[in-house]
Image 1 (spheres, rainbow, N blue to C red):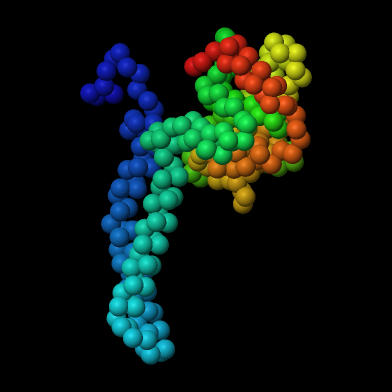
Image 2: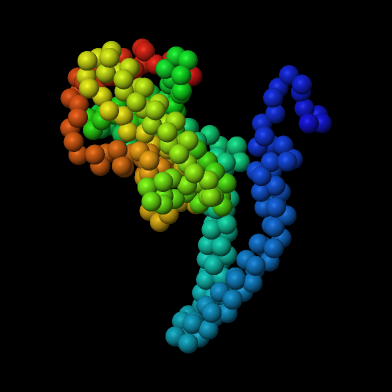
Length: 254
């Protein structure tokens, strides 16, 4: 890459050939069109507001119409901005593990759950978050796919667009089993781990949840809610503390 360093590997998200680069390029180029459409929508809102004010004999009819026009324009701006912001992790502008970690701590920390970030079994697979609490143990990874990639389950199989998701599911399920085996061996407490993927970008079904092939994929904001919804009291407070302490000691920080 011209202007780059031969000693630093370039991130594909920021090269001129990446889908992320083109996505941002087209977004910037479409700014004028969005502004024109927003102005048209605001004008329509103004006309409707003025007509309603006259129809119902409201005072300050022009101010009412201007207010409705501003509301329409603000709503259109927010809708487009939120769609663009939703791709931030996929574009490499935000870190998914940071977002999910904050959500987990704010929702679970005060309920007796322990969250360990960036852990791995030495020489084996790693995960972004290990959650240990009264309801059980979970591992959570963070992933992003392109905004037009449909994430779905058909006949019990996981799909990312037209591609099978078996490799992704199997990898995380196997990692969960490896973590569970290590914790069980070191503590003597039978442990079963539920694997999850926090999906930061991609087309999720209504409700933001897909379960297939032993893996749950969901929007980051739903992870803590789903964990807390587990009603079984799997571990006592002492067992949670023991598991967390052993995990912190035996699992390598990455």
